[in-house]
Image 1: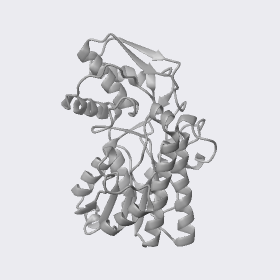
Image 2: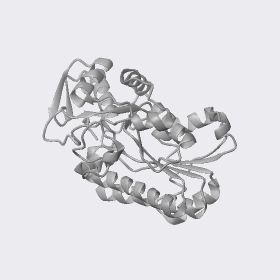
Image 3: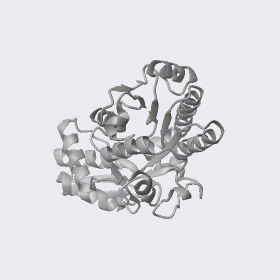
Image 4: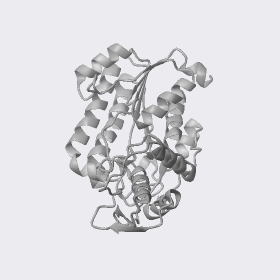
Length: 326
């Protein structure tokens, strides 16, 4: 079945569809022939409540729910709001899955998080290692809440034959990302900091941590493509990683973004601030085997597109910003 044949006449509800990943995913859905896309807005539907989730299902009448909506941020936001991040992310998934079961929903797609992996997980992170330890402390409330939904989906599949799948994208980046320096992740933070330093003639930029930890990054359009590939072709209980398999140290990432933005000044590492998880690199073999999917966008290409988009927005400089790692 072609992608167009699969999506035509299907009613698809995308929670978080107005957000960073959601924007890319809904646009890709439209290009693939889906004409019935429902995007619940937070002003109309508080998805942490059962009442609002019920109204959403009434209004959307979906065949498929792709649950992207989340409350999340970088290390700073995670430290400030651990209780809220745990509650909101668990409550949204809990109500959405239960209401979908009650209504005999055709398919539920839960987007998990790489933050669910153990803090000292050996690289590359294979899906079978999810339960081999506790997540990195600053991300644990968010990661544990999301991982609990994997258990819920597995349980509902066994008891109710509920068709829910669970995907684990690595750190995302790209145009329309969150560039607020308190809640953003590392790539938009670095792009904004270095670009504003170039504009302001600043000769030193401060970044959090040591720069010695490493991360893997997935371009947002590739993530959307992977999610739709799984939605179309995968109906199993196993969680699936979505990533590139390429790892880069934060120090090397900062230097790369500095060069690409034209920043030639000093990079100062504030080692009093936390690094977060020591390493992140996913094993993507399962996605290749079960979805026939691989990321296509190189880090350099994706970074250039993201820098170009940021500069096109002509944001005013901010006097006090730092870059942080999730």
